[in-house]
Length: 179
Image (tube, rainbow, N blue to C red; front, side, top):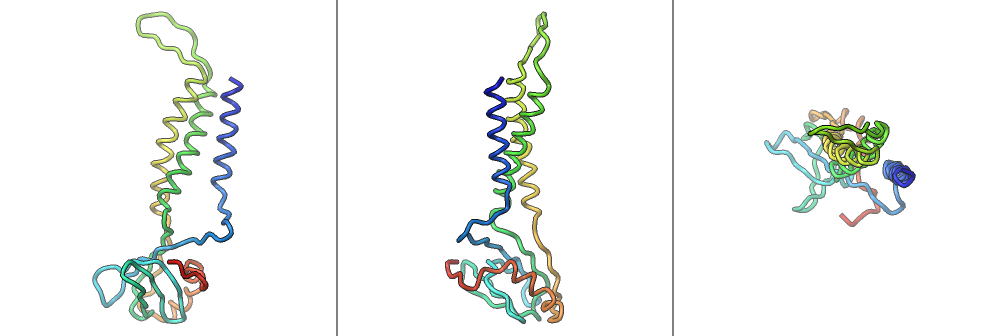
C-alpha cells in the first residue's frame, strides 16, 4: 500500500511539472495560420512568420507568401501539436484521478458464491488509472483540437491594424530563420 501511495505521489509531481506552461530558453512556439482570402475559394495554410501594418507573411511547404490585409476575410490561429499535448496532459490527469478514485474506494468485502470477485484497493487503483488515462486522453485531444484564435478582418485595414498586436503575438520572432 505504501508503494502505491509513493507511485501516485510521483505521478502527481510529473503531471504538475508537465502542466506548467513555462517556455524553455531557445524553444520557439510555432503557430499555423489558416487564412480565408476574398480572391481564392480555398483556404491558405502556413506558419505565421511575420505581421506588418498591412500584410501577413506565411511560410508553407511551397515557400513564403505575403497576403494583403484588404484580401483577408478571416484568420484562424492554431498552435502546432495542440492535439498531442492535449492528449498527453489528459492521459496523465485521467490516470492520476482514476487511480485516486480507485484507491479511495477501498478493499471489497470477502464474498462467497459462484460468481464472486473481490478486488483490493491497489487493483482498483490500477484499473481506475488505466480507464482514466484513456478517457483523459480522449478529452484532452478534443480540447486540444478546439483551442484556436478566430479573427475576422473582412478586408478592412482598420480592423487589421487593431488586431496587429494580437497577430504579432503568434508570429515567429524576427530573428528566427529556421522555419
